[in-house]
Amino acid sequence: MILSKNNILFNLDKIVTATLFIFVAASIFSISITQIAAGLGGLAWAIKTHLNHTWKEQKWPLAIPILLFALACLIAVVDAYDVSYSFASLKKLFEFLIFFWIINCVKTRKLRDSLSLVLIVSATCASLLGFYQAWMGGVQIESRVEGTLSVYMTFAGILMMVSLLALARVLWRRPKEAWLWACIGIILTSLFFTLTRQAWGGFFVGLLFFIFCSKRKYVLVLLLSLFVAVFYFKKEVQSELLELEIELKLTPNKSFIALDHLILRTRLLLSGEDKTLMMRVALWKAGWEVFKDYPLTGCGFRCMDKLVSKYPDPTGWVERLRGMHNNFIQIAVDTGLLGLSTWVGIWFYFFLLLYQRAKALNGDADERWVVLGSAAGAIAFLAAGLFETNFYDSEVAMTLYFLMALPFSGTQNGIRDDASLSGYQGKQHYVS
Image 1 (cartoon, rainbow, N blue to C red):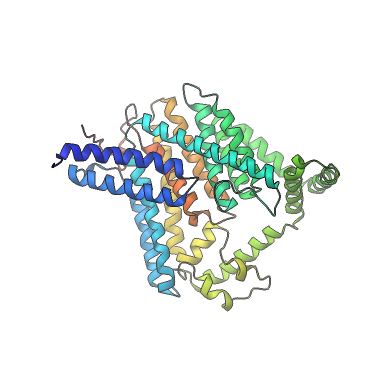
Image 2: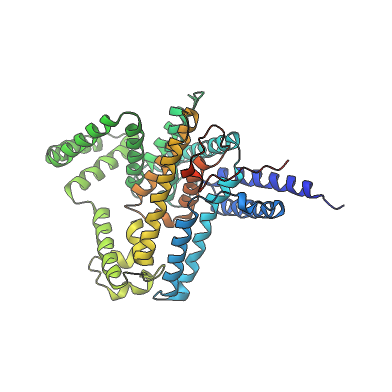
């Protein structure tokens, strides 16, 4: 039996929808399933678009800055210290296609909101597994909660972004979904159990963004208070933390182990004795030395594996870790000024488009949560990326691209048709 074109398009729509839900549900459980879902869904989208002859009607926000960054990466690999060794890392550029796949296949607000909810529920379920790990093995530096993933930093990075999306949804979406507070509490508790300070910091910066959007003066007061506490009363704070740490150690209660480690790491950070911070400083210094030798196009992806013996490494941390634990320094080392400037350009135009999008909402308060949740997730990602190379973490990056796409997906009804937005809005095309 020969299928008609309408039947083929109908089946392709079903495949796209199914793979979208699988992609979101599996994003915090299995990278393999997530990538397969994205690949199949993207292929179904491409075939459907080809059959409909609607490539010109697809939306391509950020296409130019992303293409420029991809070009800079290609140049970096061609001019790399070891071309064959760096070439394999170019496959990560395909992850950007997830951003365009989401935008062009999520055509209704109902579907967009449903996918967001599935992501939040999946993160909540994964967090419950984190609770179990904390209960069985305790929470300490030597055995951090990893949840459903094999690396605690990856797990923490996804929880960080999803918690901010959930918080934006519960604060601004109508009607209110009060039950989401329980999900937020579970996710944040599991995030705490990971003992991942860069993820905590990213969440805090995202939370400051929410406060800034609602009560700007409170952000200034909070930041000023933190500045005074850290720089003017640092010794007093360290003394109080030490006393609390001793008191907790004398209390034989397993529930206080995580709090004890938090206090210890905070005290060491304030005193300048934190080993992980010293490790990062050593990596950053090594990255700067490499960048000075390869300033324009970098030395290629994973080049530190080949170059580490050519630079001083008195601490031994560069030889052991090799990654820079900072997105900006890592990209500068790998792709030089060309790659770093185009990567920063992606974020500049992303936040510019979000600002234009927010202005074009025409008072649509229900859409505000999507814009703010996406912005907060991206801001948290960038803040955490000052202390880890989360851009190179595929699980985190794929979740990030989903969050980035949300404000530009769904129906465009009720959104002002500004000329400034014409670069990414395009026409909506539906298959009957």
